Length: 131
Length: 310
Image 1 (tube, rainbow over the protein chains, first blue to last red):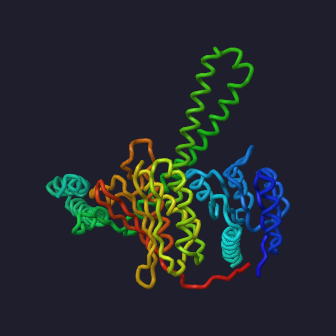
Image 2: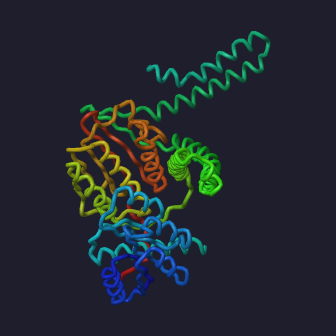
Image 3: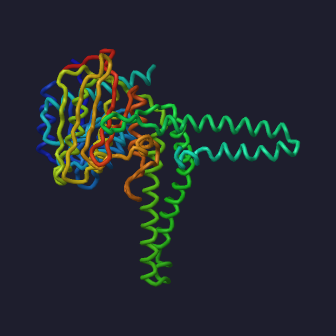
């Protein structure tokens, strides 16, 4: 079983705490952030493989955060998660390099499947760069 | 032959006409070169017309067009080349707008200009900025047409790709009384594709379908096997349909039948580019006023990737 590192960025504290706990219970290294800027700050000092990112957040929304993440860490894979997603933000997210754009509520098993595929993609890209 | 097609042959015709006076004024070499160029130009134009504008007609009146990528790649490269040239001046305009805003905010200017005129200037700069953003968006789309980024191929389920993007579109479609349905084959082999690129392509086609239907209609997505080596995803809408003469042009950059200002005419060209890069094919069938169906054909997975389990 391969372990990977996940950062969850969402302004709903209950959601972040629950998902981080569940991911840690499954042996993954998980951390949470309650805003875009906080997530970016954490990324300055630590590497992650997959980021789960809420779209609708105050101050800096998910799309703006995604743009900054991809500037800082282009190889990290991002799964956008939203309760009130629009087609426009979905298209924008995918164009900016998100791995997927998933509507809430999403069953944990489905989210884990997406994260695993996203991590697999990161490994392929890293392999390619090291060749 | 249609007048439109005759116009296509205008350039080789003009070169040929130009060669006649050269021939009679003893410029034989130039005349021969002009005739040769005219011939070459006519052959290329004929290939373009044949390949790009000849949808196949079925017995029931339905028209089908399947992409042949050799025609589009040069158009894509040309579009991206123009976009690249426009990118720099756009950046400078945006920068100068920022600078003007800064000057307008200074006390010296604010104290000496009529406040109403100052407000007009700010509104004007806001509009310039908005239009620059619009141009930037088009430029980025054009650049993506010819971007030679190597896709990251993974083995995934075609149904998963469809369901993830269908969810985004269905919520908005419900408000316009559009029924969004999926008839998916549960027994499909995994496909070899770049999942985010594929999602982008399918989402683009669904958005197109949603716009074609407008309201009170239906969109249905089908998945099925196509022989042993391919899987098909079909997106069918009950919208206005596409006129047969336009069918061969829908994948060309900037071709659009939408009213001016509504869409850039790049969505389907980008879709086609993505599918071609992923080793697939895209085709379109339509019956005007009845339906349009876009079909993506993708290769099934050939290698088991690094397996990961939780």
